[in-house]
Image (cartoon, rainbow, N blue to C red; front, side, top):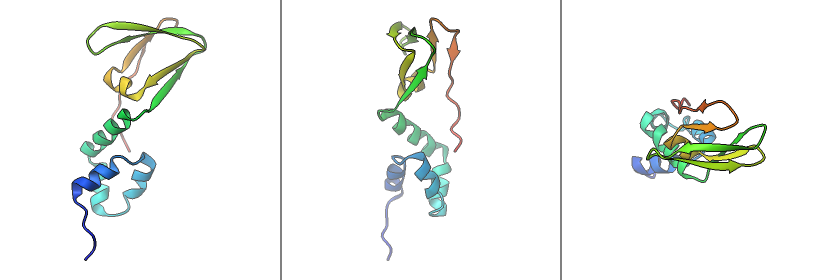
Length: 115
């Protein structure tokens, strides 16, 4: 008989794989295709990706101060030189808005993941 892997193990392994590979794995079987397209799986994959050491860089044309609001409603500022602002994906998911002091207000909203 073919080897059997429990569905939860398959879900756990696939949720740790990069998106490009996951999209290729949709062709493996109907179950994998259904699993990968399921919103619960998409959210699990997104949360795992955010926990990894993934960072975004926001680039401005000058040095600036960035003000962020914490989850508790307090504000904190970081002086950023060279116009490069490191910003983690997990921070963006926790609080999708920030203000740049030399630019107008920017609002980033998380969007539905459409794979």
